[in-house]
Image 1 (tube, rainbow, N blue to C red):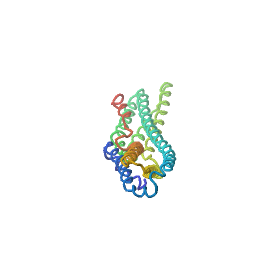
Image 2: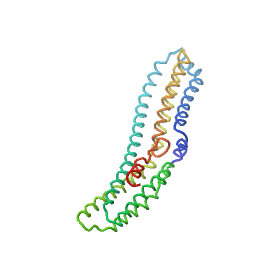
Image 3: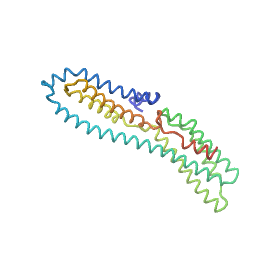
Image 4: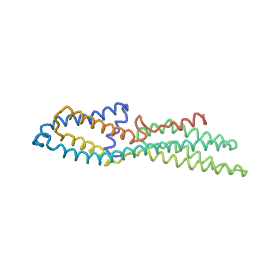
Length: 267
């Protein structure tokens, strides 16, 4: 975990609306103050009133096209990653439900042991693993219940062909559950690389700075146009940041699927 990432994690501990406001206001202030402070310098650069607005427009169009495409791809990538991790959690919940139904056909006492192991596993994930994931920590407590579940399954010896079929299917679901759990744990620290974040932030600042080189007759119009563009870029970066760490913040992957399995099937 890089120092850059650690310094950004505070944003996930504040309300989502407040983070959005702060992000938007920060970029709008940069644009408005920059436009005001660079006003005299821009007039000197133009030499004559509005002499190079067309050149500035060409540069701004080129910059915003390249940056806009890149920013759009980054936003789509973070959303796809968020959705993929949500699918992993849903798949894990499906594995738990299927395995619970399979072991319900086992004879006693192994049936009660396996169902209790699954119950303990789901409660561990919901009550302990998820709060750790929200803090960016990779939990390990649920591994104990996976080991217990495997141990109890291996102690069972099917006596009939029907039991053998159920046993094979349940062990297949167990392996699927192990893979789903590993995929979830591997996703806890998933985020955009530091170089990508520098590109996103610096690209936004370059785009806003370029708008400051316009020389307009109405300074208030110049300020409003810059503020609107700055606010839009701030909102885009806010969107990417909220989706970047799927298990952190108010907009995050939740254990709803596992909670539903527990309340409807296991409890």
